[in-house]
Length: 229
Image (tube, rainbow, N blue to C red):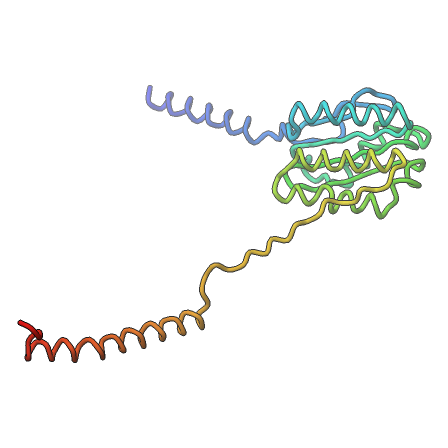
């Protein structure tokens, strides 16, 4: 009976362990995030551990300075993955409505949300920021400024580039635009088939000419002997 008891105990332990692993503890919905409001002194919410401590401090300083100087507030949010069935758009809408329930509270707010599992991004903003952060710029921030670094999982770069651009625009400065995408044009270091054929043919011609000269001479001296000996 003891082996059976041990087996049952082992199965129960495995079931508990698997249940712990499968539980979507890291999944994020609106209510898994801290509740902020207009004027809150929290600018970066990083539940995915995607931003380094130094870069988070840098972003906090930038965003706080912008809020103090202009009244426009930006909050950057990184989540590890979404709750089952929740879309990125729904999460962004939920956060914006939860944090800023009234049109007046929404007016000078911008949030940028990134899901690090899928690298999907969403941006929401209030009415008063739209004259500066136009739809064209907002779309470019999401699809270029953030999306380009995310292709290489460069989360720090993505948030820093987004922060720099959003701060510049919402401070009334010219839009610095998206990062330049460098096209890598690597010239081939391999010889083409045509060049290889030409080179091989030339080598064979030279070798045959040398052999055609050397062999008769060697044969002659073999039979006649080297002069002077």
